[in-house]
Amino acid sequence: MLLLAAPLVSSAADSGSPLRTYLAAKREAIQAQSAQPATPTAIHAKVTAESRSGVRRLRIGPTGEFQYISDSGRNYAGYNLGAGSWDSLVGTLASSVADEYIVQAAEQNIPLDALDVVFTSIPERKSESLAYPNNLSYVAYIDSPASEAQLQALKRAVHEKSSAIDLVTRPQQVSHAEVEYIHSDAVRDPKLPPGLRDFITEEKRPAVLARQVKPGSGKGKPAEPETLVARAHVEPRTGLRRVFLGKDGYHQQLHDSAAGLLGYGLAPTVEEHLLGVTGTCLTHIFEVQAAARNVLLDSLELTVDGQLSPRFGSNVRSPARYSDIRYKVRIESPASEQQIDALRQSVEATCPLYNLVKDEQKLEGSIVRGAYAEATNQAR
Image (cartoon, rainbow, N blue to C red; front, side):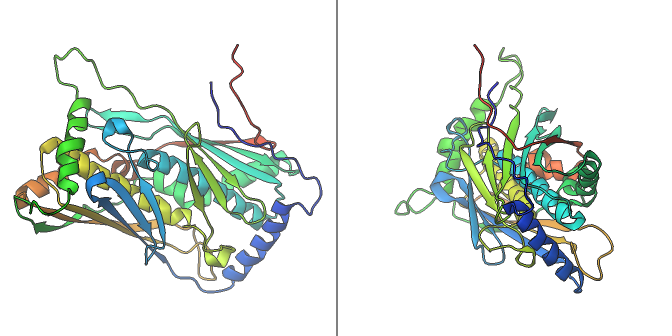
């Protein structure tokens, strides 16, 4: 079995190890924030289906200062230019769990010398038309002189207070997507370059139809999705999380902390990215369902908004939690309003991450003492 490749991080026995120094500074930042009144954080992300390529460009933050590309493999009319939504979700969950271990270790003054979180998911098919990441679990590789009791207490605090774990383990109230519909001409100006409708009709539709299994075709049921895996490595001097997606780590992500918690403004927070990933998934399923239904699209843009209650502050009485999650999609199409509404309904019924957030999931975690070591296939 091929596992994630990772450098072996040597154990640091002295109290001056880089990660322990970072945790001490983190503890001071938390204490400073806890002394001040806090307000909820508004989260905003925008996803655009990029014209002829169909790739989903995710912009995170009020001004879209952080961007990710989400794409499919070539067998699904993509170009593998970026990680898919499922891989990105698992990677973001790995990073969010790692972030919460850091925060809780700082609060409880538990020394850590190295931290990696390997997150896995075995997707399940919920119906003939819906499958999504499920069977969520992680292993936290922790190099620390702390006692077993301290590490187990740390794990309990992480599961109790993580907003990301709460998002996927409790059913969330999610709005139906609000659609802004703009009618476009049935026949495009031939002088215009190829656009989104060309991608939908010439590339996505054939790929979607090829994946559909027709009754009596003798092809059997669709293949079950493969196990998803991601590793989040905590950089000891900065607390930044580098995330390696897939068994080969081909695609990577970077996550930072909020400004008041020693963030550097180099990457989005996991709280922002987690909602953003649900937006890339919805956008992709709009493409998929439009291709399946032969609905022409000339532009497709989706926004996702939500509120995150305060994590720290003098007025905080409970862990941070997501609320008021809502989506809005802007569509230009020559299709009728009735066709567009039917499209929206089919998207919500089949979108993996939209339904994952709405449903209740199980998540398990465990701790392995020691630094994460490289594992290779030694089969002979």
